[in-house]
Image (cartoon, rainbow, N blue to C red; front, side):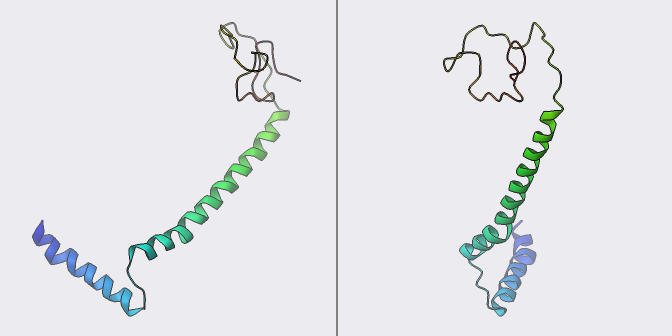
Length: 106
């Protein structure tokens, strides 16, 4: 492994370092991570935000075409009441998508 390192990898890294310094770029770790942050991470976060907002808009369109409620005996059992509110709704209850034991809220 050391022969491979000395023969191929180290000269390649030295050449890369020489090429970067010839353009006036310092090959430091902080500069690399600064560029990665601004040139890679920031656009990815922006694309994720756009994707999230589009999916919210699609969910709003789907609310109008909501599936009819079917009361199955094995679903939405309440063996113990929730400790908040009136005990029927979960902590993150959404009245448009989460049905209660009797059906959707109007």
